Length: 259
Length: 259
DNA sequence: AAGTGGTCTAGACCACACT
DNA sequence: GTGTGGTCTAGACCACTTG
Image (tube, rainbow over all chains, first blue to last red; front, side, top):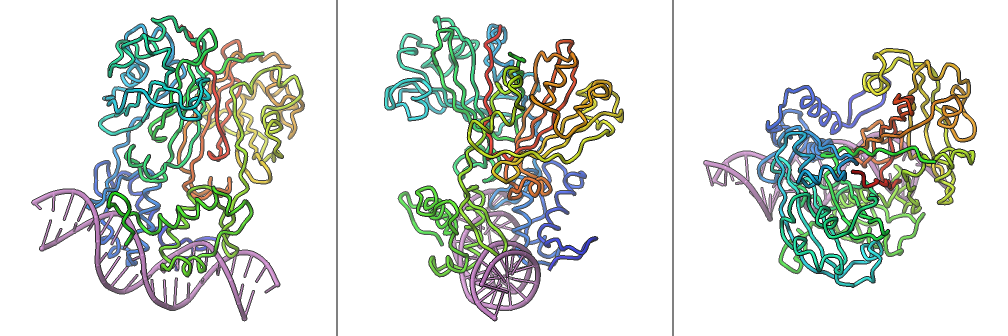
């Protein structure tokens, strides 16, 4: 099928329908929180079969403007103000203020932030982490896994890995709340002074399990970020493995023009 | 349908099939360049209907391991070595070597690189670019739009915007090839010495037009990067707007631990 | 012409959410 | 129970690629 347009080409019906709905959302005909017409209703309204409507809905979901829940329906997402992740967030002055990095940033944009600790305890170092920490794979390390919420929805999972000899004398690192300034402040309290942080960052579609953990439609883009925290002695005393819903973040990096 | 597994949960047949094929690719049973079994063949082999196979194929495509062409079939992609985009790429020493940043990086991973210039000429500054360049929207500026290829496939579009008063005395900036070290070298030749580069970076699903320009499946993640080039006088003399196929790049940033 | 993927139909049945 | 989305079927027809 498909209707002829300008040049003579044909656009599949399911894309026309998806475009129609997306435009209604962008134009504000469908407002945040509104329910998108049910699939059954669309079958009637557009006069096509259920399969075609399902393909259209898949496109609409891919646009990221809509949130679909089995048994309930699809709803227009509240346009979440993105969190701006600046490379300035590691400044000591922000830590001294008693805030961990994520809180300092959230307050700037006036959103409610929450952290829920999923796991704190020893584990055996997986391959890639061991390499970065420069220990043997399988060595005992400390893992701190947590889930970050923003306005009630999960936006980020982060796991910190630290060598055991570094953490064994710092009891705060085993607590859910490591105290003002976060774990980086505790590490510096104990003589691990940071020289630099090295972040590698990659975007990819979310796997099924990741999508459900971050309440995303499967296939929606996620950012995978790995950070080494390097001290003045050149040692990596923490590796942080972070997975973020891509539509929730903008990253900013300042790069000095070195020789 | 779906077969019971360990805990009693059910996994849809189309996901099982997709997983089966993806594993065959990862394990090397299907090698780069091999044709993935046709949909008709899969219908027989797995004993399901065409619709189910199509859903499975959609999943497989989303994995990014496969390249599908209408009328021909699906083929396992040559594993493209990702390009590592390090923040070190702005070091002057790399420019002095006579290479622009992208070439220096491509050579490291032994891939063929190509640039095709799409447009060089004056245009009126769009809103966001004007803000960054600190000029009035609509002012005449110079735009340099180009498309980067890697091993024959397009991976990145980039457009540089420069204020007219900066470029008017630098004829090389109007040429397709601005000479050794690229446009940054030419700008420094003419007294615009860089202090820092500020990059903002966001991932999102590709729009239709973007997907076709970068030869991606629609909805595949892209990275949108905007960079301000700031001189020692504090002026932004270039803004670069870049769109990249997310699966082709890993970004690395080194962040000094400032106070 | 034969083989491939792309769109579409008209139904069935299942799983989840609300009342 | 009613309404919702999720999976699956068994076909039809179209569009692109290759011989």
